[in-house]
Length: 533
Picture 1 (cartoon, rainbow, N blue to C red):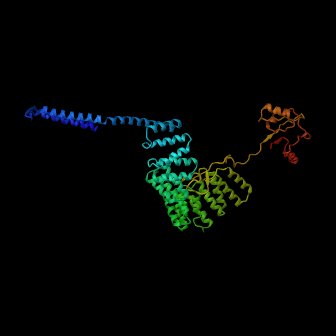
Picture 2: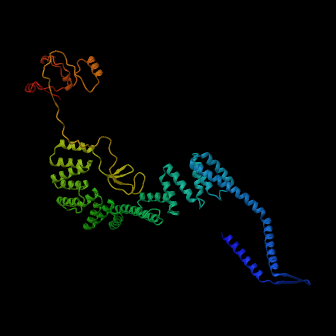
Picture 3: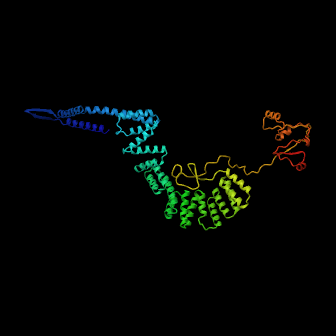
């Protein structure tokens, strides 16, 4: 575009110049070797322009002839390079698609057309082809050779990191990730692996610096960075709680400021403040965390904020928490535990039953069983509550990668992932859970009226079982004459009206597990009534 504009400007200037000369006629006289040449001014100007153009054309021709060997060689070199890049592109696509044979073929073709020192991607394609062919040792050697090239060093570290992860060598993987993180902190895979390594070693300050570097490079968002800092600061506060209480307090308070709804941070901050007798500030932190989301660790620390408090004082503090979060199962559970410690069994039972109504879970039934045993000592009711607790949904706990922990931890013990633990209910047990009809009393056995007319035939009465097909019933009747079937109302309805009754002397023999009927009790009953059992 600029060239076209410059050409138009030159043409426009020449046009203006010739127009100016045309408006001002004149002659130009040139004397040379005794001869005098006289031409008009316009002709002289055209001659000058033509000479300049001829010189320029001649110079271009001479330059083209001089550079023709280089031009020809460059043409073939560019053509060869284009073919090499085409082969490289096809090979990368084949490697991504999992075609190892085509990737290897295109690797050799690209290596012939392009020098590997000019195009580092040939090394990557060769390593990918080796991986597709199952030659992991060759791929590892290729990745190691990349470490000598500053341009390919990060790529080589990435390949060695993935190979170490495949072999399960976490130490080697973290070593390569650490080297990559030093060179390029913006790499997510290197930063994450290094963060896991620092967390596993307990190097909380190093992990915090790495999180700050991730935040500064905008690798992670601000909220995610604040969450990670809160987790790391909480872990640091827990580690320094006994050795350096002042540093633990500072770290815990900062963690609570970054994540006010994070229960472990609130518990760590409040515990550090309670150790320094700052009960008021620690209680405010726990109250704020409780209002956000009730947690049993918050309630436990809040009710025992003062070790010397009486049980009634702890009960009052538990009730204060309940006022902050009404109609919540955890609030009722907290009051029930404190009331049980205070021997206030009526309050404890009422709150435990309220917790069960709001959230049927294992801990509520276990607490109610403790209350029952402490108040009445009725082992039957205690066993009944324990059986319900076994079938009830489990209480929330700290869960990470399938591992259930009683206490919060900053990283998963399985994968080492930071902030992996979540407060939720673990996987449910196999089996039926508590149903709403479990508390319903057992229904009484139905009473069926006997027939008015006695039977007239002295023979066993065939009982028809409605729950089985008629063919099966008749077959069983023929093969097992002495088999006693359950007595049902349908059996009485099927007895003929003119049948004779069975005398007491011919009473059917009882089965070993048949308790029978007490003769005295049978005499008192009406002969026209029959009770099933």
